[in-house]
Length: 303
Ligand code: NAD
Image 1 (tube, protein in one colour):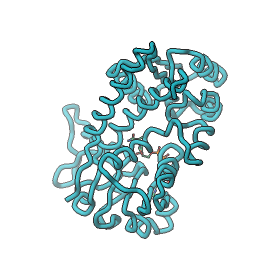
Image 2 (image 1 turned 45 degrees about the vertical axis):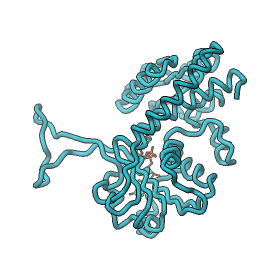
Image 3 (image 1 turned 60 degrees about the vertical axis):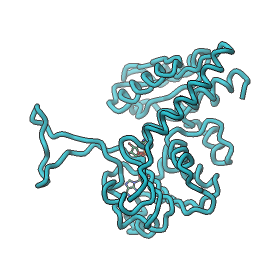
Image 4 (image 1 turned 45 degrees about the horizontal axis):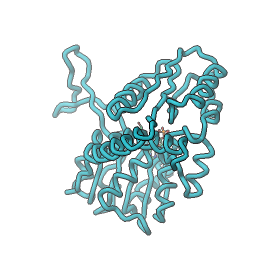
């Protein structure tokens, strides 16, 4: 049975470290701050915004909410980013996507000051990451690495397979692994469609899954003794023993959050595994705060 990697415990450790660093900065008259930029009313983005606000409060960071109506023009959004770039209370800017269709991601992201780009969206920072010189590393990918480092996983020469090739998780986590001298492969939807997913995943000493598909990874796709990091977040219906949906008080199907990995099945075969919830997500939140702190230091000429 696998070691369950406790993301909440790792997140608490990182939070304690942030609080210590934050106090040292306060002595120099510096308070880190995060501004979120939300355009429209996307449910997931609203949830994430609230979480960032709560996390900032919990460590005494400034928090600035820029929630703009759906009909805000691209030019107006870009102007808000320019204001945030100049605002000394803001050390990091987090655009919450998806934006409404009339706003181009790149128009917004390319406007963010590179030393305030705390989730490594800007092409300059992605370039630094590719060169192995990240300053503000992307939060979810670094959370995956941090979780493994804190439980003593060795990267050099390890076979790492990443499932998912998005710009925000799959590609950057593969680069972070490559920068640590792991032998890194990236599988994705076309790997599955070509019938080759299992061929790759069963060779992985470390399997990082970020596909957004509940139950994608079952034990037959995992090597005995692998470390399995589950990034996926999916809402699924709760089923009873006969496979029927369990209803709540309002007669609606109850749902729960699961990852992309069939946890109960895979934990019997893996050496270590992250749960969902309580794994990568918890640490991602802390990596964002950590980046805001680093950004504040950079802006003060301390780093
Ligand atoms: P995305 O939709 O942008 O990308 C999904 C990737 O998975 C694509 O590269 C696609 O090719 C691949 N994929 C989809 N189906 C597949 C299949 N059947 N076989 C192989 N590959 C397949 O998603 P994303 O933004 O990268 O997020 C991935 C998941 O991670 C989502 O569930 C998301 O909610 C979650 N997520 C979690 C955190 C966190 O902090 N825990 C942060 C960001 C995203």
